[in-house]
Every structure is written in structure tokens, then in C-alpha cells.
Length: 365
Image (cartoon, rainbow, N blue to C red; front, side, top):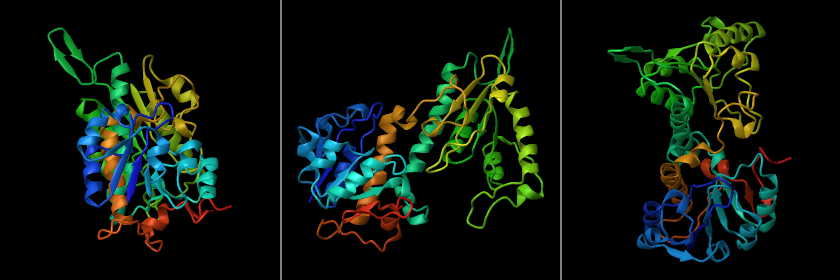
């Protein structure tokens, strides 16, 4: 059975859906792996590296996918790739289902069974396939490195004969995977770090990394989480008190990193224009949510799109492992054939299209 990986064609996308390491593992499942020439260039992987791992090299995307039963991608395929896929092909990738409606419809019409890695359920047995976490981890790290590179001062305290240099102050807004890695990275660089989040459980996580937690700690905050681990909506009174505390905190910072994203919706505003105006001259804001409108409504913020692609070697390595673990779930170990169990909560949770229909409940209108 053939598995194909094509070159990513979207501007700024340097990642690739397979590495020589994952090719060897895929072949161990009994799969014949076909890589489009040049697919790994952005991640510094040569065609010869893939060939040495046992892959076939295809001259173009069409020849790579036309006989494939499985296609692995980073981002959604373009129209030419979709047209070349045989009916019944299994496509796996970061398919941006909330914003790529036209591509999803085309995949359904073509009869492709598409799986969006964004929709994997957050359960323990799917952790090794968790693409959002693996990529967000690198994004949080890179946000701090980018900020340090543009900051006009040193990050750690330095004691010199000529005097003492004060450490930079870094404020992380949003303590998910990206935020936690940003805290850890800023701490390793010697900054004084603080962070905020609406979920009470994150207080201990922040403090365990040596940062201070910024929030109005009252009884409402302590009860601000559902049994399922999601944040409850806070009262207007609490929101006003928290906003005032955050505004006072922001004005003292050298670097602010925002990480808040809501799937399928515009990113929430965390840093207002008045907060930006209150910051010291030369301060930096890194907005990791710019692809969904941004957490700061200004144009002078450092906001790279697709931050993981700026670390393409490592992000491709992690992503390829995530995909291998998913493929292992849908391939019969004895026959090497696709064996989709639509009753499996991981398969069902990630499934977008099946038998010519859009099947995911979040997309069914």
C-alpha cells in the first residue's frame, strides 16, 4: 500500500509531513512511502536522505498521490493535489477546518476521507498524536527567542564593574502549552517572569516554573473552572478587577507575549491600545494569535504567522512523529492495509469527510 507526502505549497510553510526517521517507521508498517521531490527542503532534508531511508522520490505531487491510499500533509492540499487523489484516499494533516471550507468541500466531493489533526480528542491515548501541543511548544519557545533578538537590552541581571544591569521583565498572557514553554524559556534566559490565565489550575503550574501568577484571587476565581477543566465565564465585576490588575502589570513589562486562541473564533483581545500606550519605550509585544485576528488590535506588534514553521527542522520532526502514531492507528499491522474503525473515538474525533460527505459535527450545517 502506498503512502505519499507532497511538498507544501503555501507561502511561509517550511515544514514537511515526514522525516527519514518516520519513513523508516512507516515502512516498518508495510507501507511503500513516496515523497515528492523537494518536499523536505524547508526542513533541511534532502531527497537523498529520504531515499536512503527507503522512500521513492516522485517528480511532482500528481505522480506522488495518484496511486496513494494515504496522503500526509502539513496544511490543506491545493486544488491540483485534491484532483489527483483517487477516491477513497485517506488524507491526514492540519487542515484548518474552520477556515478552509472550500478545500473541505472539495475533499468531500472527491471522495477523500480527510482527518484533521486539530480535532483529535484530548485523551490520554491520543497524546502521542497531539499536533497542537507539539507545535505550540515550539511556538512558545520561539516567541521568547524572537523577543530577545529584538529587545535592545540583555535579558538576565548582570553584575559588572561598571554597574548592574537590571533583568528584563516578561509577562505571559495565557498559560497553555505555548505559554508554559514561553515561561520556561524566559526564565532560562534570566528574565523576571509573570503570567496570567483565567483557569485557577494554572497558578500552580506557573509558580512551579519560578514565575509569579497575576490574578485577582478571590472565591469567584477559585470556582472559575468546570468539572471538565474549562474556564467559566466570570462576572462583570471580576472582569473589571482583573482588567485593572493586568493593565497595571503590563505597564511595568519589557516584553509581553500573548497566546490566547479559541478554535473557530476570532482571538480574544488581551492587550488594549491603552495598555500598549502605557508601556515603556522599546518594550515588545509578541502576539502568537495573529492568524486568528490577534490578541492585540494594533499593527506595530511582533506577530509572525505560522511560528512553528520558523523552526522547521524540529517542528517537522515532532509533527512527523505525531502523524506516524496516527497512521499506526489506522493501518492493519498484519496486512498493511487501511483499516478505519469509525467507532474509535480518535478516528471519529478527527474525521472531517467520509464517503463523499462532511461528517464532523462542528462543520455540519
